[in-house]
Length: 249
Image (cartoon, rainbow, N blue to C red):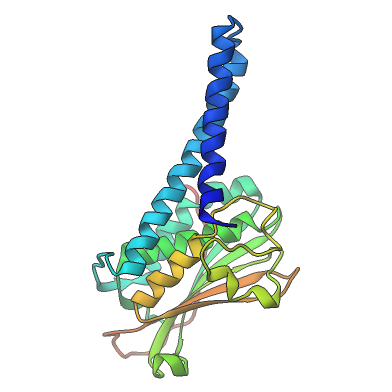
């Protein structure tokens, strides 16, 4: 998969259906139902092309260091909750149950750009729902834990998105974060540019964190974004809280 192919495919569709419609009208055979179908395909391909161009612009800014970040103390549960609510209708239509859990022990604040971390959460949720079959489950959880050695042992908050989908082969767990790469297990199931996870990695790394995936084919995947904690207060650890998605909220 490469950039020229990804750009040309929706562009060819736009031009092809536009020409079909023009030919029908010129020949006096402008059947409304056919024209509506052509316009729908043009709109669909246009949205795909716009999404791809926006992703390319984001990735270009991120890789060049030109992306502006607005860091502040934020409650990550308040960053995650709107994203879950936003995808509630999509999950319902797909027959997928989504839950949100706070396993941070009350230590849910971190020094982040809320908008960009929200972008990461939305991308991970979108992928999880897309690749989970009807009747399946997706859980997004926030967990406080010790940082790994490459994060100098700092305490971190993990945003964990777990699905019960088709999983990712072990040899592809790193490759899925590369530009224009999709897992062989999911490539034919749904569309996508192969840029979303690359953008997530750039954003998380800009926060001094890291992102990875744990998966077993046929048994689902867990994407984990580990973000360093800064300025968290000490106190008694509270029990984990679990929230069901309320579409009406």
